Amino acid sequence: MTVEPFDVRKKCRGPQPDVRFNFIAGSLYDYYYGHLTAIIVITDLEALVDLTCPARAVVPSLDAEVLLVLAGTTMLLTGRQVHRLAEVGSQDGVRKVLLRLEEQGLVDVVEAGRANLYTLNRDHVAAPAILALVGLRGRLFERIREAICAWSVQPVAAAVFGSAARGDGGVQSDIDVFVVRPEEVPDDDLRWSNDVAALGTAIRRWSGNSASLIQATPAQVASMISRGEPIVESLRRDAVSLFGPNILTVTKVGK
Image (cartoon, rainbow, N blue to C red):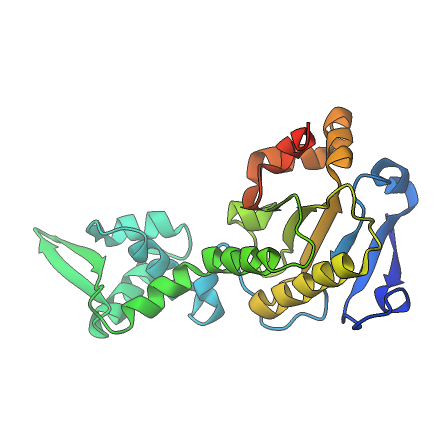
C-alpha cells in the first residue's frame, strides 16, 4: 500500500492546521473508497505514552508495572503474586522493586508467616500521583471526548478503537479514533475539517502518540457493515464510545 500525502493547508482558507491528510491509495483504494473518508496521521512524535502502562512515561519500566498492579487492588499480595500479575521482569527484580518502594513508604508490608504481603500505601502523599498515572488512559479518553463536545459541527458518534481502546498499545501505537460525520456535512466543510485536524494535533500533544482519525457518514458505516470490512469487527470488539451512540448503530439514526 502506498500513501499519497494531501496538504490540507492548500485546501483550507481559514486558520492553517499543522497537519497533513494521508489518503489511502493504490491496491486498497477502491476497497476503502467512499467508506473510510480520510485517515489523519500525526507524525513527528515527542514524549510517547505506552497505553499498556501509561505510568512508564515518568516511572522506570518495572517500577511502573509493580505500581500498576498495586494501584489496581486493595488486596494484600505476595511478591510472587505481584510478579505474576505484572507479567514482566523476574521475580527477584519485582522483589527488589517492592523493597525499594517499602523503604520509600509507598508500599505497606504485612508479615504472614514466612511470606510478606504488599499493598499500596494510599495515605502516602505520592499515592494520588501514582493513581493519576495509572488512570492516564482514561483521562486521555476524557480529553478527547471534551474536545469533540466543543466542535462547531457535532458528529453523530465518535469512539476510540484498536490497541488504545484495548489497553495493549505500546509507545509506537496510534490512537485510533472513528468519527461519524453527519450526512448533511460535506467532507470538505471547513469547520469540520479544522475541528478534526485540531483534535489530531491535540491528541499528539496530550499523549505523544500518533493520532489516526477515520471519518465516515452513517450511510458509509452501513455500507462497511454490509461489505463485512475488517474495521467493522475491530469496532464491534474494541470500540470505546466517547460521543453519541454505538458507532455500529448510527445507520439507524434518523430512521
